[in-house]
Length: 384
Image 1: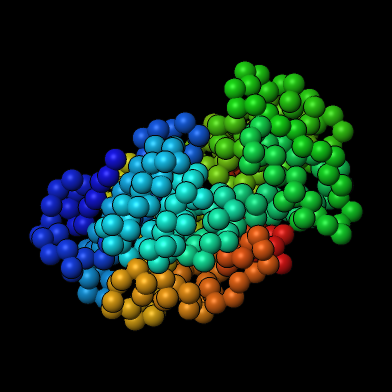
Image 2: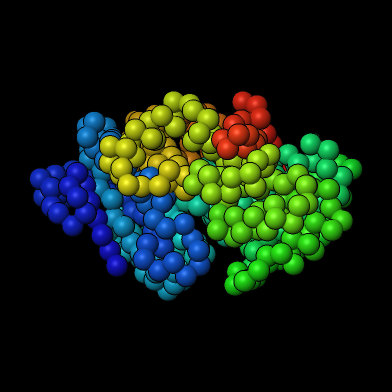
């Protein structure tokens, strides 16, 4: 399924659309309709759209308007590959803020078309290694590593990991181990919880029996169930998890069960202020008032914002995919705002995380029902 918009609402034709040559075509590829794999839908797209609408309203990029093509991969790798081929046929300048589970099917096709993928949700190995990939965060690997390091700094010596029973969840022990190498915090093991688990009490008991700290790697719904079960068990134990697991709505729902949670965040958390978050929230209020404010819509917004700032810094006027890919590869300390540290793309890192340009997280905790920063610093993940 394919959608597009420029200045007009989706499906309507704007005056600018009449002359396609005056538009900068971008594409978003992700799970829009099918929610099979619990991928965040449709938050990243909403963030991308809200940023683009503001940019177009303010005159576009170097005098040209942005046109967003939206392609639903329907949680299907074959559909994801079709979306990538569509991007090549359409001659898009770049892919922005995509959230597909199937980058391995998308990135090689985009690479053959010299199309940069900017700010996609990094899930697969290709997100961190393809030459046309420009992730703006360390994803689950970095957040799990950051959460492990954060809880270790709070004095945890015997750590147990909890994750959804999936191929991705099974990797969490690797990330935590790398983060804690050389420390005196020991990982006791990984408790995997099936997605369909009707009752979390037995998993809580297994994870909490011998640990003095936990790191949870689950989505918001699953983490919420686990935390409620932990609270009801009466077991008092420090818990660290990723910011996507505890959006404001979940914190409110959990109530006392959320108090004291340690949080690892790839972006400056929305609730903690900053100029970028202020602009993000203003854009969402103006252009997507019903959209959810969370780390996923943040990521989509940041991807579009980064594209705009990179093209302006590099003074790009030829928005062919090859020119955009070249410009993205030359960034030195790009100021993307204060949602992430400055972006440099001229240096690659050791495999398999060659393209891990932003390898830091922020530490926060929940107090009095609100998320607040532990400090204003960016903390290293495991990738050094």
